[in-house]
Amino acid sequence: MPSRSLCHVLERRAYRRVTWRLIPFLFACYVAAYLDRVNVGFAKLQMLDELGMSETAYGIGAGIFFLGYFLFEVPSNLILHRVGARTWIARIMITWGILSAATMFVASAEWFYLLRFLLGIAEAGFFPGIVLYLSQWYPASRRGRVMALFMTAVAISGVIGGPVSGWILDRFAGANGWAGWQWLFLLEAIPAVLLGIMVYFYLDDSIEQARWLSAEERALLLARLHAEGIGMEHRSVGETLRNRRVLLLSGLYFSFVMGLYGLAFWLPQLIRTLGVQEAWRVGVWSAVPYAVAAVSMVLVAVSSDHRGERRWHLALSALVGAAGLVAAGLSRTQELAGMVAFSVAAAGILSIMPVFWTIPTSFLRGASAAAGIAVINSIGNLAGFLSPYMIGAVTDATGEATMALYVLAGFLVLAAAIAVRLDVGSAYG
Figure (cartoon, one colour):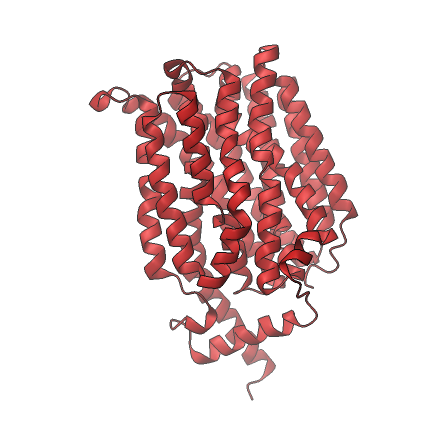
């Protein structure tokens, strides 16, 4: 029987191997996913005038993605639970890459709506599937920092995607007779297809299949998960969907996503209102808030893990995000002050994600975890439809998006209030 200190060393080595094997690759996959989901915010800088679309029409098209996402999220995650992550995530990435590239051919608002809706169907299940997948490798005590490392892909996609998207819009405009926004959809879809093919050959569906771990390491990791699973809830799918904690988490996530996608879809345009006009400069400026958020996500998640506390980390992050959005509205004509405000908003909003997703995986297991994670994500992401539509409608009605920023801040305050009332127990249980 190995000593306690030897077991500790073996455990640390095993989790280090798992992290280096899984997280960089899944991180790259999520960057590709998030770019294909929100690059429409940069395409907007050119495509609205070319297609004769209004701000409201753009908001509907940007958000209708989430209706398809909502309808197919739970079935998709249940299929992933049945057939395994390797096959299903590969299918998701390849089909969404193809559909994202096809958006370059839209010629009207109606075709834009259709392709965005189909893109939502194609991508449904990807994010909750990865959350479920990681919960099958890591115990709750390690999950916050691991989720942060994975989910900083959202922030890094902003750091990378902003300058790259702005450069594509300027550099490729007119090449082969296509507009810059058409090249944007095509070039940023290619990584999703290539990574989708790689998923099938690279990922293992479970710890048992991971031959790159020793038999001793596999046994140790399985034992850690088994010990944690004692006392966890095993519910039917129907019971899970009616569970009070699941519904509260869905409401919190909805309020959070209102702020997240309001920022993601409209940041390029909002930066323009600060006086930045060239597409490449918009791209560079938009990277700044996401770079700040990438650091904040990791720091908040590590703090949450170390303290074994989730509620107040969620609530305070949401309030910081709300304060940043309000400050952005108040400083809408001042370039430097506006960027500081957007950076604060991004740091607060994005720091919610990794801490939040440790909670459902701490009390759900098996098929109930697949269903619970999916329903939380699908209900929450309905805000991805409402948020850009609301900002577009307010912008059309008032000529500016300032009031919409205040409404989004209100939703983040609501998220903080729900977080304080959550019964999450120990962060590790």
